[in-house]
Image (cartoon, rainbow, N blue to C red; front, side):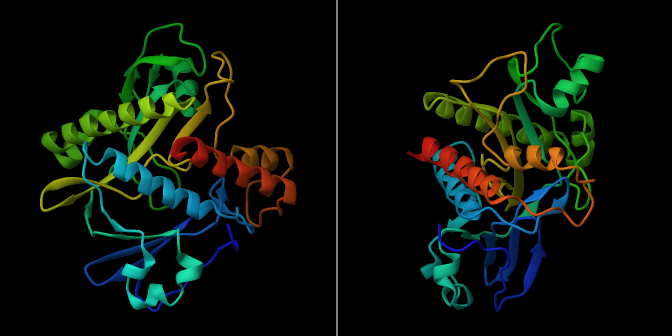
Length: 291
């Protein structure tokens, strides 16, 4: 996986700097670089997970290609040799973790699809029998499979946490036609991803998509079905009625929960073995999905 990349600076205007990605303006597009940074409880940790940004980029590229018959996407290329000179100057460092993408008018809605009852959805269901306001049958267990995938959109918060939106609120925000396209496309993408993952012994519990508009056409943006945007479970160890181990940073979150940290900066340093376990978890899901 090479060096752990925590920071990236290019001789291009910086559009944004997120918890994981650095975004730069380029002629006729954007440069998205996935670093190896890791955040937990809204705090960026001092250590990264080696190769994490490469896994996120390669999985997104894989899914963009596999799902393009359902929805076009913003990816132009991941070949750094075909990118601007500022990128080519750092080719060895940026190869595998960089995307050149079309600019889009981003739709201000996170499009979440849930196929199983987990996380905040499980907590809400226990209180009200609903998930993000969507009524569900009584008696479902924790981690249980839902009768049908449900669309549970949220806001796109620049700071803090995303907040749930009802479908009616999405309609009010983007219009009935676009809201229906967001819902139907998100569910179609989830179904295709879940079916493919199931063939490889992986359950796709839930995921979120981001979309933009390009010349009026709905386009899949950001990332697609990565461990950062999705909850993946191993079908071999799946057991309804309890929480499941996920192919993501849950190992890190669990260690931090047990460390006594108050979840405010500065975070504690992660033990080497926790970093190594997390790195293996990311590469395992990539290997199993992509072969």
